[in-house]
Image 1 (cartoon, rainbow, N blue to C red):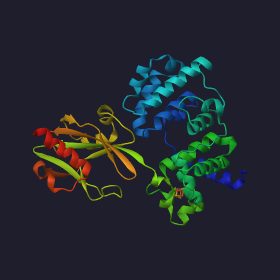
Image 2: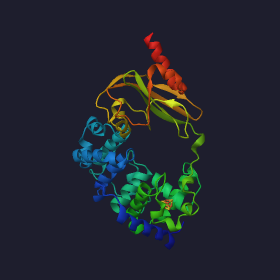
Image 3: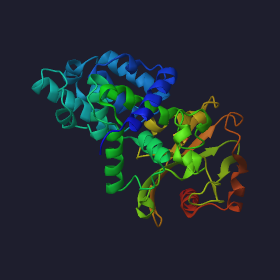
Image 4: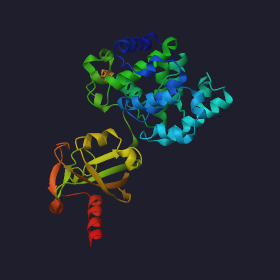
Length: 360
Ligand code: SF4
């Protein structure tokens, strides 16, 4: 596809908006590919607010490729502890060792060589080479898919091979080679701050006057995904909270499984995780930061529960707390003997039945 003046007009608007609105983040003060790499890998799995502390601690202890390569894997994992997705930390470490051995502890400076490093995919390679050296490789992450799909009104599903190819070519065509790094950061930032998944701020958007989805009032329909028939794995963590002979339930109201049924307070994670990781998540804080004392009484075995298009891997945590006022207000306080009056999913019933069996 050929670049046109019109395509670059979009880029100019994006870059002007970015200059005025970008967040001041530590890795944006650096063009060191190592710093960019670490920040990108951390941000793939966590929100900026939570990732900042991890980033600062990590680069303070491992300020460059050499120091990371010379560390033990145990120490690298320790600095990663709580972030989850530990394979990413192991890949960082392995790639640092590879660069120490083959590139004199420096980043190689071509896209194919960067892309070939362990744990670095298309997106991360494009981010590193464009942010660090302004090489003309377009980034395509979830934010970019969303902005492009809405702006151009593209209904090709983004989760198909054809969709991925189409969006990658479009993003590349829109990229002005002279300001590749700036453009890439600008479109991602627009997706992160303004063209967000729910209720985007269209009236204040620099692209609003030419945005197809906005003009058609169809913003919520984009981006299109096909993957409804695929089976997906979900990881549920339920809290059977005990307080003064009572427990806590909430009603499921979203368009998801079990709408209308009752369940214990729930945290869902993207992959399996242990109690130590779970208790350091933002969601856990949201639930329990107002409780001064809590005691973990038991952790259930993992329940595997198969539904038509998804498999749930669930753990129940029995927690005793000393006060109830600090819990979020969206839970019903329910006497434990009265639990059987509430309609709960079969999975939860199975767990409750197991407790009864254990006490007999
Ligand atoms: S006008 Fe709205 S939908 Fe279109 S790009 Fe801007 S924020 Fe996204």
